[in-house]
Image (cartoon, rainbow, N blue to C red):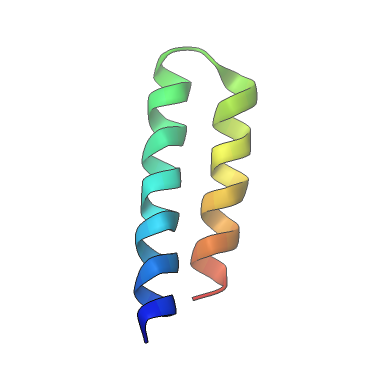
Length: 44
């Protein structure tokens, strides 16, 4: 059950980092964080 919470929190943090990167106009890192967030949330 710990792995579920770890992946959930890490996915949410990655999506938040994607939003911050998009606001700062850093599109390459925003795309990377979106992909990482989706992968972590999908694996939960």
